[in-house]
Length: 260
Image 1 (spheres, rainbow, N blue to C red):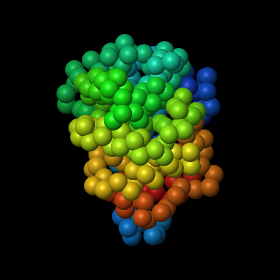
Image 2: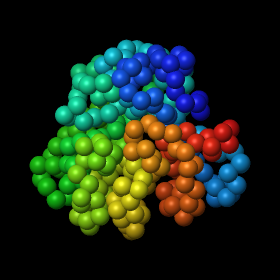
Image 3: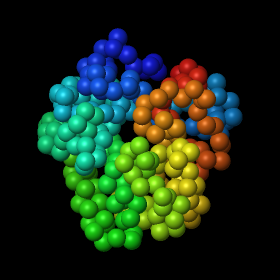
């Protein structure tokens, strides 16, 4: 699993052929349960919770995703949602997502993991959830639709490269809006993209009292562009402990070879 995706990988050719053809080579995201002892000794065994592949779009046969998900329960498929790019490579149309949902719902014996990766105006509205009635209505309708489609995790990509206005990330109202949206949907788990650009947001969230249990963090300095992590992954024990010892890592780094 821990390799740089290439055209030699049949799995990635099968599912992400459009991404390989039109974009830089995708790199998987992983979610791990760390203990304090494991964090202090990076050679210790860690529990892998999920292996995420992002960018499924209309070029992919939904039945192939269902087949892979049923045979590899740790795989989580990430679908990017950005209104101004819907239908373009890596951005599935809602009709395709609905079709995928219908296919998966017909097999109730196996639950295939789905994560919605919010970009663009969806994130702008999410960050205004507690300040703008129109934004709140948009997000409420969309999150309910995501749940109906079978999504159980939602990643918020609050970076400029993902079409988001980042000037107000440090504002108290932005932090309040984020937490308000998360707390309103306990049936969903929300993923905070943690990198240098989103530092004003995630640092503010970490200061919140009674941080929601359905909020976790993803170390992703590539900001969703799928670049390899050359410097290695962060190992701040305070941060990981604050995030319930559940943390995600995007990209492949030296530490990936230490995970068994």
